[in-house]
Amino acid sequence: METFDLAPEYTISRVIRGGWQLAGGHGAIDRDSAIADMTAFAEAGIVTFDCADIYTGVEAMIGDFRAGFGRTHGKAALERIHVHTKCVPDLAILNRVTKADIAAIIDQSLQRLRMERLDLVQFHWWDYDAPAYVAVAVWLDELRREGKISYVSGTNFDVPRVREFLAAGVPLRTLQVQYSVLDHRPENGLVELCAANGIDLLCYGSVAGGFLGERWLGVAEPKGELENRSLTKYKLIIDDFGGWALFQELLAALASVAARHGVDIATVASRHVLDRAGVAAVIVGARNRSHLARNLAIGALHLTDEDRAAIDAVIAKRQGPEGDVYTLERDRTGRHGSIMKYNLNAAS
Image (cartoon, rainbow, N blue to C red; front, side, top):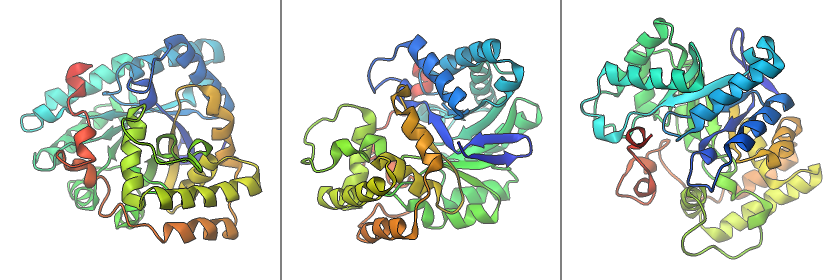
């Protein structure tokens, strides 16, 4: 597995094990099996894990995994494990949020993860009309200086907001954004801004919730309710990209590349993102270890110029999604925003 140095003595795997699919809405999860799967990922070299305060139960599961891994593998092995969590204040409190609220979220994550200091906290804000997001970022940086956080980062912020954080002196280490063969919105100014300011990208959505896989090649467009939240979310991205016919053309191009290298479509799609400028790692969701071998294959795959040209020829036909990162999702009355859940800290 390839690695990336986010800072001196802070090395991550370039494939990060995502935790959203363990949070509910994707089917039943067996806790003991999930923890055993995390151990398998770590032993294979995928030593970085992504979660969030609002992913119900996931921080606690990772805390149990860390405790067990330290007992069985030793302190040195445990120190190579990094956990990236999030701070996501509920929509309902954005206009009255206090530093005490933010500190409580951080303290809760510390308790659940069984850590004395959080490795990296990725801050997300639901509504830019609530103006306290810069203040919250500053508070998180104060908590960093108090020793509760090693690195402060952001999630789903656009170019104007990143500029505001930088102007306020907040040292964003990374930015987590959606980035895939279907969604190139980070290239509309964010990649350039981050490169100029030493901010690395951690990217989710590289397999579009599973849509970028053999299961969907050559099949009719699904109608009605989809089986989980990820598919519901990414079907909207496919619609914006250009619809099911263009998506099938993209899958066929990815499949041809995959066949040349003896891998699968998802591996090629993730490698495409990992090779983009400014990308430190891709976050790949997994409910279990059944995809572990394919996740490891991402690091070993080397796309050729011919491969990239075949993929880019289809991408050039895309209609969208347009705009800055997460702009579509911030419209709570729109197709993307209306499927979100906004007050999960209160529920967790």
